[in-house]
Image (cartoon, rainbow, N blue to C red; front, top):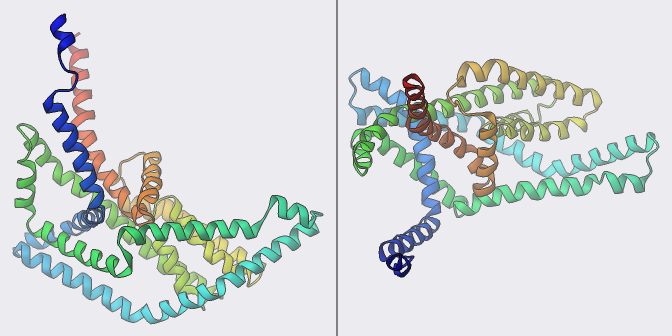
Length: 357
């Protein structure tokens, strides 16, 4: 008993482990920009790997398949940028300049409607201050943009990190076997073999998720652009469609964020235009929910919607809009490890115990 009382509570090994953990946490915090770049690179690699695998089956060298896929991707994005880029930029600039006027018109319309219902101006200001609500929305959007801006150290830093993520993802896809072997061999037996078996399912789930979301967002962007043009908002149709398509990359919250600018513009054109635009987005959202998502995204995520929502909110809180886009596929990949390395062995062991008893 005396020997146990005299034994130090904190051994030298535990103290060194604590110091090393603190040092590692500080180091990771200082390198958070690089970690975000690596997260983006892994998501891109998971999305592009299936295409490279198909090319490799046609007896193309893997490095050549990677170069071909990336050149095709860059050429396609450049072509789309040259085709719609100038018009898109012009419309966004005009929209940013005119949107405050549209918001003021919306405030005036709401106040007029409230006065017709017998609500006084003081009651409107007390219970429904649209100016304050609008200011809060704008400030919240600015904070989200600043979070993404800060983590990438500005616009030039963001472009550099994006290019670096593309290069890193290409290296990951091209040297997949050596890279995976080197990483899993850091773990002792039998964990290295178990982890090596999870790489393909993780890549499949992450890649399937991001491929589906990008394809669905592109289809919705085109559909909304065409629909708004038909409804008489051709002046901003391309910009509003692009905004809706980009925000749709964010699960749950994205469709709501995408519809707000279009409705603000539509209300200034009259009540019928507003109703038609609202109906357009309702139809498009139902098309995504019941047709496109099951068909193109399917069950690739296999994560409960609550956890997906928490992933979006957590990613937004830490990394801004960028986090809302890249954290959900990481959660989808992590769910593979949880299922295959813990839940299934646990259920199997419980089943064996029940059968023995």
